[in-house]
Image 1 (tube, one colour):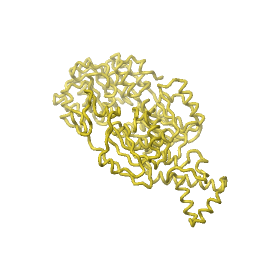
Image 2 (cartoon, rainbow, N blue to C red):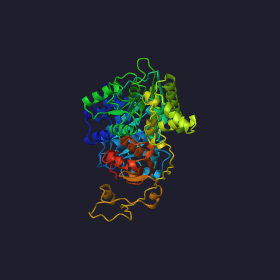
Image 3 (spheres, helix red, strand yellow):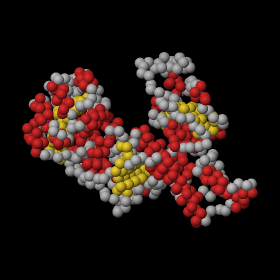
Image 4 (cartoon, rainbow, N blue to C red):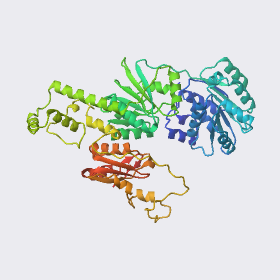
Length: 595
């Protein structure tokens, strides 16, 4: 079945706005088939594999049916496990984000009863729970089903396997007879068919058959990665595996824009493709990618539809796809025409359960791998440089520098020390300086320039200077009023905070004694108008400075992060250039100022 745009499914503007905010651009087959039927109010039996996008298929109609003015349970979603209940609740919360007054509440075993009592008393309309805990609340009279409009059984066959069939019967009997009943199940064993026959009225069957197989010559792995570390791990894997040509999939257009910006700042050749771009712009990017004018294409799922490019080494799932079909579609971009390919997926936190669903759906062997250490990355870089240097020596295609070498030997420098010093300079050990012995052997091969590789891991750099360790971020104090530092003058305009004036550069943030201690000789301190509250990390600042201002990596000294700004030490000779290049650029979704 063909997919449709969500705008074609007759949804409210609030839900469409939430869908756009999440980044979904097109409904999956199960969503396309189920949403219009569910919106009509009839009972439905949906048969689709786990991981096919069915959560949004029933969550969207459920949200649309809720009367926000009625503070009582109106939709009940039953899930087999607490993990799935939490996952469904999170999806409902995202989709109902702009529906004012609509509240969801997960109830499951292991969570505090008091919290659940409080949520029910506050009038949550969409209840997502496991059968056991729902039964507990019914027995305690804390859950009232009198106003229930819709009951949804998610993964009904799994609930059967876990022995919940009797609880389900009791819950369905207690629900109002005029409700809408929805079953979603990958399979329909006889006990489930009996429940359907007993508790539904002329249900409409919606079955989606999926090709549950993947291309066998693709090596598939996944890494469990903290969300904040994804960029560093991505760069580390690219460097250690020496990847030169690949596609990186993100779930939203905003993430595509942000990732491209970060990758370019770290020295990679990358461009983007998503639904907000015109067809002409897309074709221009695809053409450049096909000609190998780019190393990496960062894209959303819809933008990459119909993308046919040969020799793609690897597909990165930077964000986990929301269903198994999208996973198959993504990784099918590599390993074409009998070639081998690689698919690398990042999994964060509770997404591991979603990954397990994808593994079950695809019936593929997707290995869990350990993130390579910094030592492994450094060893790989050293090996790449060694091989490049060895190849240059073997070919003999370099200009002789005998006179310069003899001068150094005459000054009693050992030949091994001379060679070590040259390698030190070539690998960015000191400030970038052009040497008469400009053999640059590593540049003979694309992407094997050691200094550029060093720039790609700014947070993992090492240099002769000692750098202070980053302080642990202090927890913010909760207060109903904004705290104003003692040094900040009272605002002249009522309602304008000191932070807003600081951002306008009406005032200068003075250095504390602790800030001044770390300043090194020959360094100039620059203030950047971005800090911890903007989601900025040290690596982001270093990457921007090196990538945009194009200065040597060791020209950047100590960095001290503050809540709304940051202090960065830069060699005096580069300070004015850094300010000129970075002042006014787009940085972390805001305009950066520095002085």
